[in-house]
Length: 416
View 1: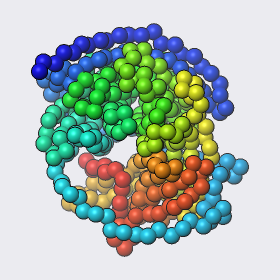
View 2: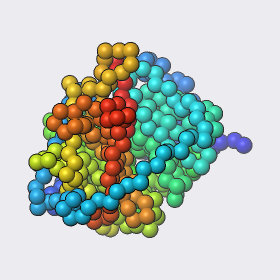
View 3: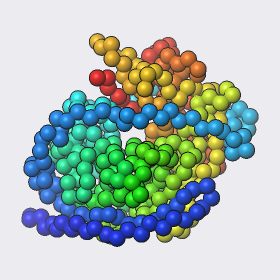
């Protein structure tokens, strides 16, 4: 069977209309560039990519920002222990894996490697700052390439912070990455597959992060529901704020070259994480972010939602959710905090930002790691939340290391 493919690289005139809504700035626009490309062509481009891209050493974002919200009591929508006692949680031992194999090894060329991955019905995709790998579900390697070479049909470069998920309702892969870490050169790349096969055809889009060249886009978080794909990030540079891109999911899946976006900018929250929505009927797309780990002995997270018309989505910060079990939001020197075997170099544990959010059966599940004890931390632990759509805490728990001494993190960062 022969593969037929076309490449389309269309630079589109963007409309960038500023609209005031609540406490947010709202802009709309279109893709800077679009490419409809087969995976065979992506592989061919990877063969001609200078291998120096893999050997170059990349360090973390040099901007250290330790987020802590000033919580307004009037914005608190639920306080655990006051509004309701959180029920106890039965603890069970996690089942052992059915199979294990090497996904994609860290090359040591990026600190952190920023590991991410997803499973589809027949394939696995693993992404690092350095490379991308596609495997079958038995672990056999089908393709491996540098992260940058995957996106070479788009303008710009200097890719980092990849995230990939699988939309099981629409049977599509969704892949995002940042490109460029300077104002004016910063872009958001987003790609979706034409089918459930990531070795088939892809629709790739490039969006300029800031046409005014004041800030650059960092650390995307990715989620979806029946209507939208949402990608949030943190903006650094001549200003500092958070942003949420909202895309019409069906427009991206159709390969619409001028697929539009709605972008919200807000000074509230940090690393606002959209949910993977495992309910193809729910209209809202919920999001969760961390607030402050310890304000007067209470730790807070924030709940958000996107709703409204398909072509005119609205963003709402629903409020703060608190627990009388505080934590510290960060520790160490610039995040270097956790010991590693055989080295005096500490592992960078970053901060308490939210990591993963899932909507299932009318409930929102959110996880992040935190620093304990509050005020003078000596370890990290995983904290998880079960919320209803009104922000009520149904369950909350922590997973700690042996005897409260060892540390557990949701994402691993390596020392130099």
